[in-house]
Image (cartoon, rainbow, N blue to C red):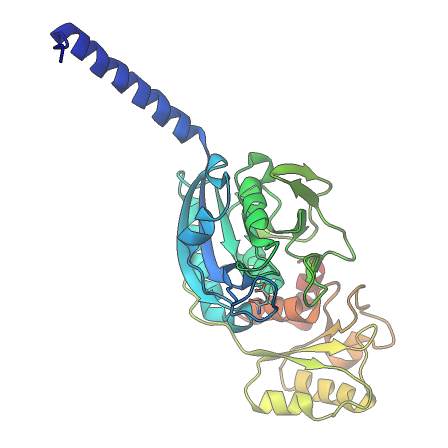
Length: 357
Ligand code: GLU
């Protein structure tokens, strides 16, 4: 073999060094996104690609990232497995862990955004909780899937691709926490799970989606309403747990002792998933009065999917000591009440929170 000259060898070394500096520089130009995985159907697996039976939270985050073609061209990705559960098992403890982790990550100049993979059953609740306690305007995007990773036409990989594209986009700053599924971007405050199984489950029926993301291309339509993230007064700093708040579901001829039972069991606040405009039968209204007189706040929401609950409608809140949830559905009203109860507040102060957030 012909010997390479001393000069040529050094020249080659210099060339390689330059190439590696350029390559590093290019790699650094990609935004840095951390994916926090919590489980759900997106990480679910079943025995058959066409059967509906499966188990949530089976696939680990690194395998999920590797299953998405070209996703590493969007950002430098790091995955962290925070939990691996179906979101029916999501808990306040995991919420606090995720919120603290998101806040720590986003404080760093080395992190540009966070994606959270999550089951869809309670995704709107986690999104709204984070919307109230994340202290950064960098993008935080939740995503999931309706079909498990083993299914024919699994929707998880494209949802994850789109979620990373959104989190990596500097224009997505300041929108609060967002949910991306089925090519749509929804605001945490507005989004609702509307279908039990189809892929178009997430809708914002009152306010509309805030944008679309098609194979990573983003189009925003409007800014979300309500105070959130850097403009929110709520914080999880040093918080170890949240007070118990229960939801009472309204129906015709509902049992009138449910509120008393929950208060006796230790509830520090009650949300009513009321009928229509936050209504309930006369016996339950009396129970509301008993609870609020005993210092247990009661928030009237509605079991119907669209529309606000009026402060002065068929029920006038001031007469019962209750508060209207405004536009928040019962499960999100519960979250706001849990956070609000960290401090003593008058009925009027509570009502103001439900109007502003
Ligand atoms: N039980 C599942 C969950 O929320 C339902 C569907 C999903 O994962 O997205 O985790």
